[in-house]
Image (cartoon, rainbow, N blue to C red; front, side, top):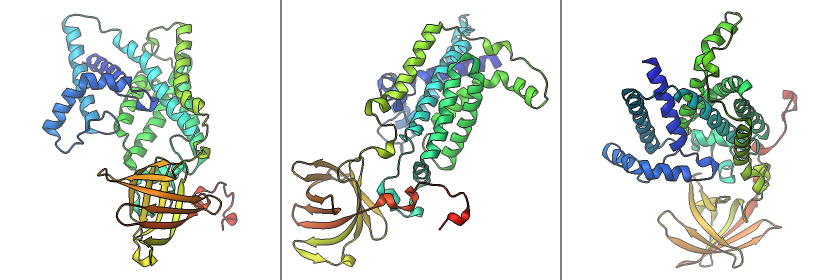
Length: 397
């Protein structure tokens, strides 16, 4: 029975490697394969039992669609192993195949996330609208993500640890050490995801189970060595995997490193904090507002600031600190913006920007002619973005 569940989990993991889309690798062939095979059954189950689920079925984050997909993969794996045993087909190579492929799978995930932290592509610099939001108005996941994004050193150190884990896993002699380091990191990440309600809990749990299963055979040996202080030898099952030609292994390692580093190398972006932001990006204080040439007092106008987000959103901050956002497209030649709300209503806006003075004027057309005069705020001077460390409390002012 134990062997049956081990082999079933190995098959389940192998199916997960194939069908859980690794969207962070910036290719979608995995998603297309998964969608082709599983979209219809997942959609049927979701529509029958989860009426409140989002209609656009996704196989990412903590969506109901991904939960259903993993449930189907688990059922398939249990039935597949039963079928193989019923027809007296060998299942001896399932676990060795799992160990081989899981090493490359876990390595690529850790290397990808590790380098993304080092290059500040994961914990990126907080956007101006976040920096000017009330602390209590932000969700826990936004708070965590934004706080991590303020520290370059923390990103580099945590990223380096994940890169080290991935690198150790790639080599057979250091694989066990790499998996132990990956286990510690995965437990910490899962704890963070649960504690701050970050929507990668399901994938992190899957990854943690894969890492743990690779270490299952050595847990007793590790306990005897570290707790009972006895001389031990790793069990033979640890080395019972499928041999890989050295050249093939070197080629696979090169492909993995290439996949992980290509985005940074192609864009030459090795520190996202220093990446050039789009035109008009920043925070603006509204100083003057007119409707058809009639000026309004500050108290009569509901907005106090607005922000230009790097992902082409303009976000207005009301006097009560709440915010409303719109997508926009910009035509630099005509000095115009087209703003679109969530109901696909569009409005044309003419802008006039004085980069030297930081003045930005927005003129809204359509029925009433609105004009907003604003001044750029030095959001990078806010305390949260200041570097440095105080060795003593006497230095803190």
